[in-house]
Image 1 (cartoon, one colour):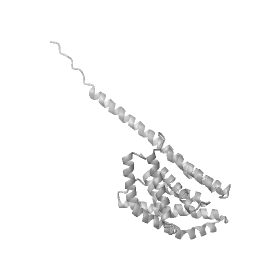
Image 2 (cartoon, helix red, strand yellow):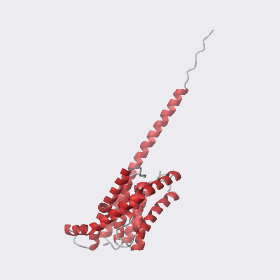
Image 3 (cartoon, one colour):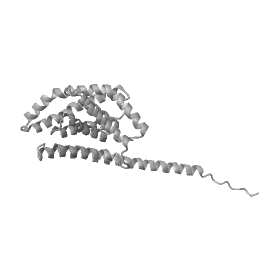
Image 4 (cartoon, one colour):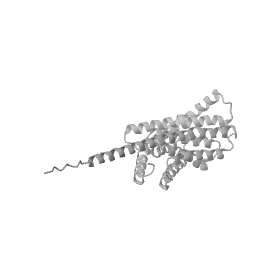
Length: 268
C-alpha cells in the first residue's frame, strides 16, 4: 500500500502574513499621519505666530494703525487657512463650521450680556473651551472672529487687530495644552489656572502693549511699565471672570461638545 503524503496546512501561515501586512500598513499610515500632523503644526505656527504679528506690525508702522479693517481682514484670512488644513483631504462640513459659528456666537453674546461690567466677561473662557474641544486651529479662529464680530457692536478701531490676535492666541494655546473633556477636578483646576494666566499674561499683556503703540507715546521702559501697572487691575478682573466662567461652563460645554463630535463624526 502506498502511503499518501499529507498536504501541509498553509492557511495559518497565510493568515499570519495577512495580519503582519495589515499591521505594517497601519504603522506606515500612522507614521504618515504623524508626519502630516507635524507639518500642519509648523505651518499653523508660522501663519498664526509669525504672519499675523507681521501684519499687525505693518499696520502699525506702515499705516499708523489707520487701515485696521484691512489688517483685520488679513488676520481672518491667516486664521482660516490653518483651520482649513485640518480638512486636508476633504472640505469642512456644515456641522463643523456650525460648531465654530456657535462658539463665536456664544463669545459675542457673552461679551454683550456683561457689557456693563468692565472686563468681567466670559469671552476668554469661551475661547478656551473652543480651543480645548475643537483644536488649536479652531481655537484661534474662534478667538479672532469673536473679537472682530463683537466689535461690530462695541466699535471697531485700531485696537481690533490686537484683540483678534490676543484672543486667537489664547484659543491656540488652549488647544495645544488641553484635551476635549474634563474628567477630574485636577483637570478643571489646571484649566482654570491656565485661564487666569492667559487673561493676564497673554490677552492683558498684548493689549497693554498695544495701548502704548496706539497712544503714540515714546516707546521706552517707563511708558510700558505705566501701561502694565494701570492695566493690571483690569487684567485681574478679567482673570477672575475667566476662572468663574470656566468653573461654571467648562465641564458641561466640553462634555456636550465631545458628545456632538462623537455622534456626528466631526473634528476627528
